[in-house]
Length: 320
Image 1 (tube, rainbow, N blue to C red):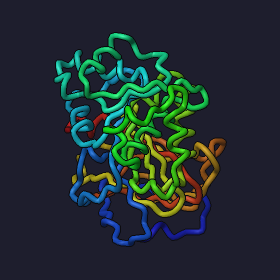
Image 2 (spheres, rainbow, N blue to C red):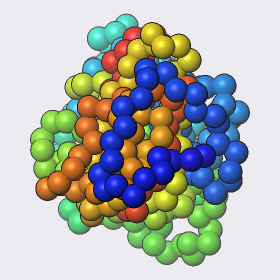
Image 3 (cartoon, rainbow, N blue to C red):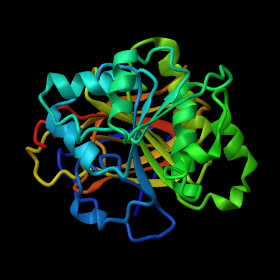
């Protein structure tokens, strides 16, 4: 794979609307599949690492029912963070879905938003664990991550939950911190609904979580913005390939941005409408926004520090 060869700083090259970009074979290239498991491209070959978890936060779910069904059906574990359980139950009922099918495994948080009606409904099924964690030194977002890690890495966590006698303040975190980190062997691929949009401070906190866990080899995170159909994820520093197929010149455009939300970095790309080389990107300088993929299988990005990518899904998910 060859990036643009030039010494010119901040070089930009405009490409045709369809460019042949071969699938990477170099194992040193980090491959990111942002649309898994909604869309499984041919080149995926089921090589997505880890267990996929769906976490629903306290924000209205504005997905098409068929998109939500694909997310649900293709994830191993579903968790509601506090009022996310209200949003799930409302969405299921408003769209006439099967209430007994769409049951989360856990509801966790400080429970300042969970209604008694929702709580009692899920408890009545006998299939959902509702666990109060009232500590204000961790967000419901953090508590959801913790319960996902414990579910897959602590033996018989779900079945033996009641016998663990976890306190209602921060018992989950205490249990996780008591374990040898070597016991955490199952990587997680986490999809969050409701992390982006709504209150601005909560959105910024979510973006901070992407950077906070950037070096965690056992955790990948993606955010669905359901107010405006897009997906947001972190691309680590290095050479990366983002799987995003475009097989025909008239395929829907996937508008995207490559955003310097932390440190400045130098970037090179291959497979975008406006490819760049030696591109110095920062919040007070150059930002590659309103770009889009023209690569037949996706695009490459080589960056000297972590960056955040957002991809517009409106046209793509209209076909799901």
